[in-house]
Structure formats: C-alpha cells, structure tokens
Amino acid sequence: MAGDREFDFIVIGAGIAGASAGFELSAVGRVALLEREDQPGYHTTGRSAALYIQSYGNQTVRALTVGSWEFYTDPPAGFAEQPLLNDRGVLFVGRPDQIAELDRLAAETRPLAPHIQRLDASAARSLVPVLRADALGGAVLDSQAMEIDVNALHQGYLRGLKARGGAVVTRAEVRGLQPGTGRWQVETKAGTFTAPVVVNAAGAWCDEIAELAGATPVGLVPKRRTAITFDPPPGLDTRNWPLTVSVAEDFYFKPDSGRLMGSPAEETPMPPCDVQPDEIDIAIAVDRIQSATTLEIRRIHNSWAGLRTFDPDKTHVAGFDPQCEGFFWLAGQGGFGIQTAPAMGRLTAALATGGPLPEDLAALGVTAEALSPARFA
Ligand SMILES: Cc1cc2nc3c(=O)[nH]c(=O)nc-3n(C[C@H](O)[C@H](O)[C@H](O)COP(=O)(O)OP(=O)(O)OC[C@H]3O[C@@H](n4cnc5c(N)ncnc54)[C@H](O)[C@@H]3O)c2cc1C
Image 1 (cartoon, rainbow, N blue to C red):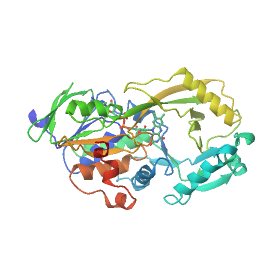
Image 2 (tube, rainbow, N blue to C red):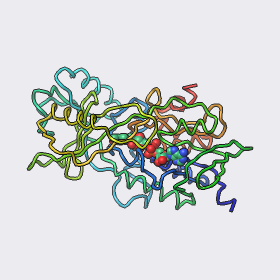
Image 3 (cartoon, protein in one colour):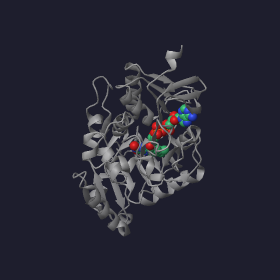
Image 4 (cartoon, protein in one colour):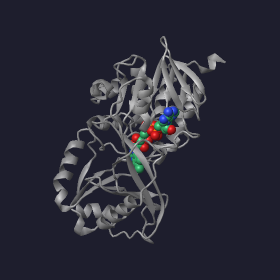
C-alpha cells in the first residue's frame, strides 16, 4: 500500500546516530529508519569501547557530551530496564616527558567538567597498580567518565521509535535518491519510500549517500580502530580499574567482563567497508600496553575493528545541505558518536523541523554554524 511507504522523515542508517535521531523525530512525525544490514548496529555502533568521557574531543564535542548527560541519567519512562551508564572513570596517563600535555588537558577540560583532577604518578599507580613507575610522569583523572550500556541505549531508541508509530526496515539498502516535487523518492532493496526530509545517518557511507542525492560530499574519512581482549594477571582484581589511556591517545585498556580490553588507538584511513582487524595493529597494541605497564599479554581472546568516521575538523556534521533541499546531514561522529547521541538526536529533531538549537545545547556553546555542512562548502 502506498501509505505504508509515505513518511514525514526517512532516516538512512540504523546505527546509534540514525536510531537517536529517528526516535526524537518520531515525536513530531512519521519516521522510516532504513538499514542495509540484517541487524541495526552491525557496523561501528556495535564495535565501540562504550565510554562516556566529558573531557574527550574538542569544545563542541565536549559540549554535546555534557548535553547528553541528562538523557543518560534520566531517560524517558520505560526507555530502558537498567541504567544506561555505569561507573568507570578515565585515567589519562603521561610519561615524564608528557607532563605539559597532562597540564594542558586538565586546564582545558575543567571549565566544563570541574571534577577533573590532576594526579601525581603515585596516586595514579594506586588506581592502576600495573602502571610502570619508570614510564609514568603523572595523570589526569576524570572520575565521572562512565561506561555506556550501548545495547540498552540503541534498543531503547529503536523500541521507542516503533512505539511512536515509526518503522525500522532492515535489508533496505538505499540505492537511489530522487528529489521529486517536495518529496524525496528513496529507492531501496526493500522498495521505494518517500518523505519531504531525508536524514543521512549512514556512518562511514554518508558521503556515498550524499552523491546518490546529488549533494557534494563533505570529505569524510573512515578510520580503522582495533580492539583486543586478554586476561588480567592472575589474582589481581581489575574490575574497578578506570579506563587507562595515554595522554597522546596511542593506547588504552580497561576492564571488560572479567578480562581486559585494549587498543592501539590507531586511526588508519580506509574506504567504507566491513572492516577487520590487522595483525600488525594487534601487535602494536600488545607492545604499547606492555611498555607502559607490567601486564604480560600471552593470549588474545578476541579482536575486532571498527570505523570511526571523521570530517576535516573532527566535529559532527548536522544540518540541511546548502544546495540539496530536504537533505539533512548527520555524519562525522568520529570516536564520540555514542556518548553524544542523545544530544545529537535532539539537535537533529530541532533543526530538521526548522527550529532553533535546543536551548540547553546553545547555552553549552554549541552553534548551528559549527555543525553545518555549509562550513565545508
Ligand atoms: C574501536 C572503537 C571504539 C569506540 N569507542 C567509542 C566510545 O568509547 N565512545 C563513543 O562515544 N564512541 C566510540 N566509538 C565511535 C562510535 O562507535 C561511533 O561514533 C558511532 O557508532 C557511529 O554511529 P553511526 O550510527 O554514525 O554509524 P554506524 O553504527 O556505522 O551506522 C551506520 C549505519 O548505516 C548503514 N548504511 C550504510 N549505507 C547504507 C545504505 N546505503 N542504505 C541503508 N543503510 C546504510 C550501515 O549498515 C550502518 O548500520 C568507537 C568506535 C570504535 C571503532
């Protein structure tokens, strides 16, 4: 039936970006969320480290993270059965030659997150005793950094969207986008859908979707990041360790379901794809973590990789395309797409319906100009 295919908003991509935007938009109109894979979350959303860190990223990213806090800690009634955030903490560590970087990080992040503390090396080692004394100059502790229940957040959005009358259509790869008279015709493997507004939330594929629509790509670069899991030393209780990340972000590790998860924190440019880990990155992760700690990684239990997709200034892209009417960008989430999803979902619903930025986000310093795709024109 034609009515089943006519919507107010079509959102392309059912990762966390599309799901959060689709949920918020479904409060004001009928939404179709179109996903190429069998399962929403198969790509980057299902492969993250699941952290919420207010001191991470540039000023706009930090503001969007702070602006997501309220949703995380007080979601709508019935959204999730368990808390969306759990205590974790993040310890940024630096070698003796990286003290200036630690000082800068503490100074930059305190205005938005006053709880952030500068620690000396011995205080840092009391939190993570495997840190090598000779490789540690000091640390910065963000004790309010949290671990996100990504599955609960993602499923909450998808469930909420459906409860508000929206449709989630999987195996619906978008293959063509035609601007009709006031309505986009979106051709997919599962048939044609129409709506006056299309939201491009296809993650690493956002520039490809833009080309299908006749819009100019913004210059997105997907970058591979690898993760491994391994056993902690026998007899050591690691459950309450914070995430430990080098201040230069060239390795990290954290507790993960009785094991430790680690990463070389690489950013290897790749074309959009179903990315797999590379042996060399696994070896680099092991080497960097062992150099900074007394951990001995004898066996890798699991490894995976995901694409973190960045635009040239490493800030999200959100807003209507300047040339292509009714084509809304929601791209460039980089390494912050989960922690900022609640703010970005609200912001997308506001801007895609022609409204101003949500007041709380504007008060935090977020501007439509800083996110607009027009900044790359
Ligand atoms: C190792 C790693 C660690 C990370 N750690 C964190 C972290 O701790 N905290 C944090 O906030 N972020 C983290 N991130 C980043 C975060 O995971 C991403 O920013 C976020 O998942 C991006 O979500 P997305 O919805 O834009 O993309 P995706 O989840 O990739 O979703 C895009 C969807 O679009 C679909 N799609 C593409 N093309 C089409 C088409 N033609 N038709 C229909 N559908 C299409 C894809 O199938 C996909 O499902 C990490 C990422 C990695 C890889």
